[in-house]
Image (cartoon, rainbow, N blue to C red; front, side, top):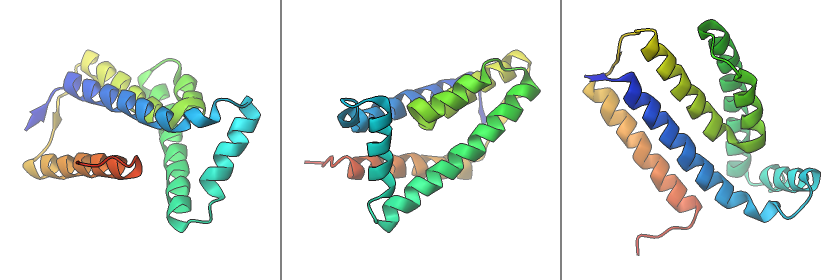
Length: 149
């Protein structure tokens, strides 16, 4: 199966916007404080809960954000994508779940403009990625207390 670079770019952008809405809906309670106080309270809540699962997820995401940021810088330099540090800093200040997909969308557009071949995938890839999307939706629903009723 072949998927167009345009469709990948749209998918990445949509994921980034959905991530922005969902993450920032959770952080609104911190925004009534000064920037430093809000950051201290947020990271205190994120890492100070003593909950192993909570700490695992925060540490996992921080290291994923680090690797994604390093890759974005090198990939942006390789492909001459401007403003890479806006994505990196935006990931720190807004959400890496927004800026990394947006970077990927810009990268896909650059690849399409350069005439790169379309991305190929198998039915196994499609099924696995579909299951990941469903798992993410389920995890978000669980985390946000959404119910099917």
